[in-house]
Image (cartoon, rainbow, N blue to C red; front, top):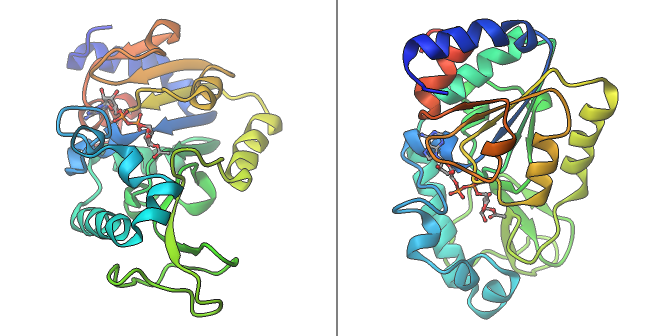
Length: 247
Ligand code: OAD
């Protein structure tokens, strides 16, 4: 659909009853783009400048932990310097409008929580950039750690690593179980997929499982053809209008 203000307001009226029900929001890097955090695959995205195989794999970390920690140190600084944008705020407000909201994010940043989305409404399926875990034991911390030299575990002295999912690694089963529990509890009224290229099968599966599907993305994605409504606009402009909340 066209994404001018009038069309968005019409769509908002149609969606309003569903938005008061059980709502799933799936977000990707595009939701943080207007906060100045680069996306992965867009122009200027992380993966355009760096080969992911060089940095975001267990093999890269084994080969050169200092380089990988340096990159994550820079990314942590970038996230700290960023602020939530109107899309994050609109999603947080939805949390008090919907009977039940689950935000499933592929993002490792903390902008949803800083906008006010509650921890019980939020699942980070690809981990969290401010979490640090141990490669040798189950130690984990959110304490800020200097990335250089690569930090070591205070318990077992093994190398610590960023608490994110790397290429070639399986997803953590705990967040996945929370998503499945959301679907099992009751039918979902509407799913909004915001700012993701939806390249992973599990993202497509969750997006198309239940309820009306709304895609918010300036670009076409593999999900577009399956969406009931497509909003071709930046999330920070579209979501406040769609949810009827002040930007
Ligand atoms: P991508 O970089 O692949 O896609 C970002 C999407 O956001 C694109 O479809 C853009 O068109 C869209 N976009 C850009 N600006 C936007 C805006 N202002 N509002 C709405 N949409 C906008 O990022 P993801 O799909 O999140 O995984 O990537 C998924 C995963 O691929 C990442 O979590 C990461 C990467 O491999 C891991 O690291 C495991």
